[in-house]
Length: 371
Image 1 (cartoon, rainbow, N blue to C red):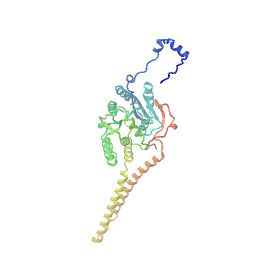
Image 2 (image 1 turned 135 degrees about the horizontal axis):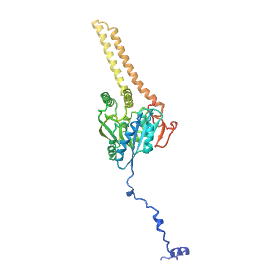
Image 3 (image 1 turned 60 degrees about the vertical axis):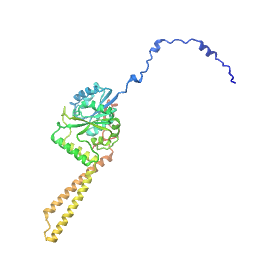
């Protein structure tokens, strides 16, 4: 049997219940805006960062920005930033970029303390970029900005790396085209990791692919090999490489030779093995030659060849030894540079990327071949 206890009502509570609610002014409610629904807000915008290393390219900045801005304006759902990396220019390149930043805050400048080389400047720009995807490209318009729309489309389809593949190198001299073909063939022959011929730095990297790329901390940086080493789902977009719109190339044949040497020694130990094999072959030939001379002397009484043949053999062996020592020295030199743990680059100034940073405050996270 349930017992119901009497309910005691608070007189103040009873009065409040009996009192009619006071109407609030409508203006007060009208002043509070209702939060937009997720459907009305739409998906968040993606951000694309362009990384553009420059060296004495003051005349190329304006044409590059004009063509690039027109392309980026036609890509929906995308914001962008253009990170110029001034690699120690001695002309007015920095002033032109600063003026462009005043007109468009999306134009940013990362100014290095001196010339550290294109690979170091490219690394600096990749580290400074804040986009969901990053595209390294040249300012001379040999990397057509019109391909950016196709790069972004393929990235949105799920590819982490979208690279441009040159189908026509008509803008290059015959010597440069031939030497490039020889380099790609030699590299892929010597290195266990393959890079696709006629593919440069012009590519789109998703944020995961970029973060993986920046984990590779070597000072002697061969970016084409680094991009290939990290892997990820990739696809190529063929294009015809045009001539430079403004200016001239900063790469001499000597620089290209050293660049190729950096690429081979960074991703292959086969040159060291080649001279091990060459030494074994020369030793075998020497033994057979010595045995032949001994047999000819004992069986047929022939005189041992004299000074001329001896000098030829000595000079040949001396050349082989010098070349092998040179290759060993290349690898030892790179080990020496790595052991010093110097930064790849130092930053003199940042514009649009968080303000100016003194060079001595720059964190030595990664770095370049800076001798």
